[in-house]
Image (spheres, rainbow, N blue to C red):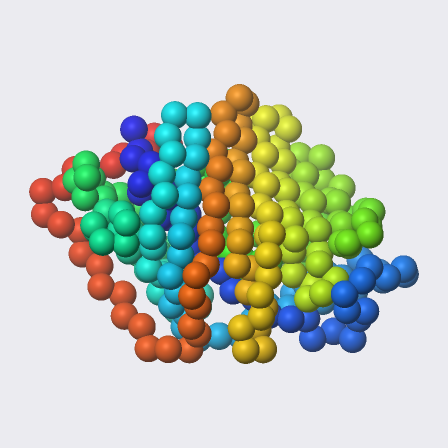
Length: 258
């Protein structure tokens, strides 16, 4: 059985985003804004940065487990994500190192490690994932490329809402008119009875950039529900970072059935 602590820190990856650069109404949902314009505005809202480091409070909850940990995060955009988890901010628990081709982590309590691909996170969250999709999840950006879908548009008073016409994988995106990042994205596979809901409850501006400071992830499959809450306490961008990572000798490898 995969240890929950490893899954937790592999899930607390990265988040950062910026204000939209389109000349669109800001702060309110306007009539006659086309889907094509919204798709481009959302893509244009992605921040341009080189590196990031942050302090994160993470909480995990399922039917049979609940944990809260402090995480130090470092990232080089599109290249690497590094996380170090501590209990109470003092006792080392686990480390993770994620690159476009590999997911690695180890945890100290059970002395176990994982060294493989994104199947770990794909199985757990119930949707196909790779490095870019995981990164986008925490950017306030859509997991899937919006240009690959056709949408109906059903706006609310507070968000532009795009709903895909794909019956196999249904996608729903709520775009915030204040910065054209997401308030929510929902990915559903009805045939597998799987739903992934990601809610961005709060954005704050750091310098000229918008950051989603509170993220809630709910993964549902049949009657099982897993919930992750992420609160960012401190974020710095474009600073020098390193990624020290080495799996300790004598740890037992975690295997995943394909």
